[in-house]
Structure formats: structure tokens, C-alpha cells
Image (cartoon, rainbow, N blue to C red; front, side, top):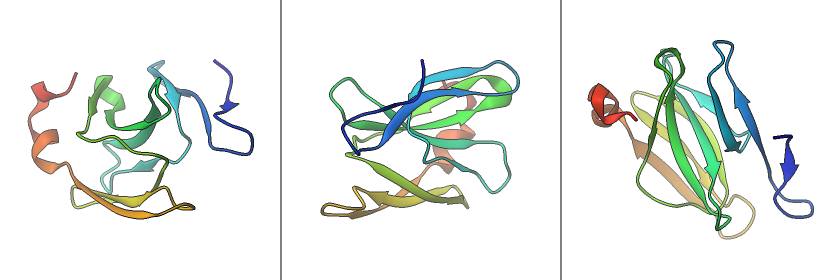
Length: 111
């Protein structure tokens, strides 16, 4: 899938491809690596034009969908097991702090 706009002048979505051949469709380009570079946090568009927050372990080719649904994510950092950013930075912004340490320590919790 090529990168496309979700709406005129709006955010984009496209295919996220890792060097090991692992791919994830429908991703927003607002991505952040964890401070240890083992995980990647990435927004993924759902069919209803909301976003899910994925935590990806590229080396193991695994993903986990974090709880919650978002409008448009702008991720800023992923350190100490916490993803920080803003949901809908232009219209009615909401600060975002998602703790993922416990979920990521449970390897079989990843899909």
C-alpha cells in the first residue's frame, strides 16, 4: 500500500517495513523507538478512522495493541516503559502517557 492521506490535508497512513521483511499496514508516520531500541511505538489506523497504539518488537516480528482508541496520535517519546505524546494535537489535544513495561515483559502477551 502506498502512503495516502486519510482526509484532505490530514494525517497519512502507509506500510511500515522493517529491514528484516516484517511489515505492518495502515501506520501513521508518528513513530518512536524505545530508549533501548528494542520496541517501536506506532499508531495504526482502524477502519473507523480512529487509531490504535501498537508496540512492535521488530526482531521477534511481534506486535501488541495497547488498550484504548485515539483520534490522531503524535508520539513524542518512549522511555522508562512509558509512551508519551498527544492525542489530536490540533483540535482539543489530550496528553498521553501509556505505561507498557508490564505488558512487554510478558513475552507471550505479544501477538
